[in-house]
Length: 181
Image 1 (cartoon, rainbow, N blue to C red):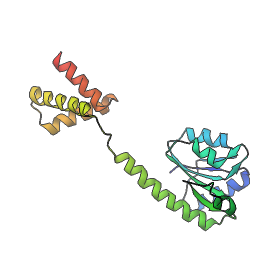
Image 2 (image 1 turned 135 degrees about the horizontal axis):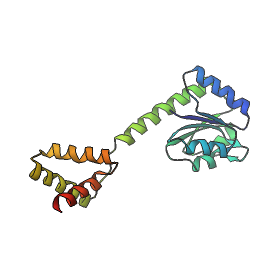
Image 3 (image 1 turned 120 degrees about the horizontal axis):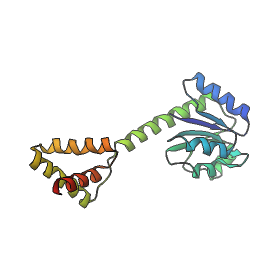
Image 4 (image 1 turned 120 degrees about the vertical axis):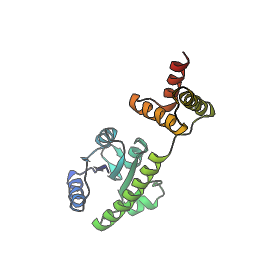
């Protein structure tokens, strides 16, 4: 789980980092500006941003809009800012920040984030009818010419696809053009 801390005062970020590390979390970066946070996040494929609501070069909500959707934001802000209705679709905690609240909220976000990533990873891409037809034709050709079962033909296309770094549809198209030509 990638965690990035973004706070205008480096001392605040460092004390939060120590708290998190003492409780088993690994912190990937400590930043003091939106620009730094975006740069670090751009090098990662997702995670959790823990940030003050106001930063030197912008607001956390604006920062969040520029992030890849694989990131979650935990914003620390005064109660009146959170109650103002400005905060939507993000996790938030009020100041003054209490360590236990931060740890409990981070645990909840981590659990939800991990489940979301697993579901996303497990979801198969939806193919068009034409794409599925191409794959089925390639399987039938492999079954006829090579005496493979349907599941073996499917595994062959799947493995060839992974070995070549191509999608199954593209691999099926290559098989069809090679075996027909």
